[in-house]
Length: 109
Image (cartoon, rainbow, N blue to C red; front, side):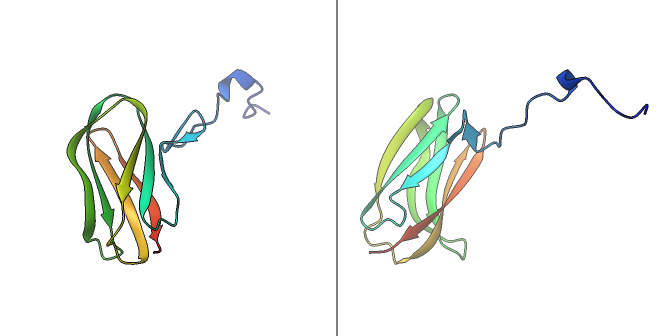
């Protein structure tokens, strides 16, 4: 049939989701649920400034961790306190000039 493509080179490789780099997540939080501190691991292709905040389900910023803060390129881990944050489900939001990433975070003291 003239509509069948038999050349496997045209198939290419499958696209990798934007929130992964070489099979590793770009934004991850542990422990999750967090009770006192949480470790935020992220991967930035290049150094750039970032904003990171914990957002409640109503869209309110509960805790700001970064505000136009320089971030290293490559893998980096940051430790942040969630002491005083009420128990609940939140979104960790990381914004840079290149991307916006989010991760569900549960706080349970």
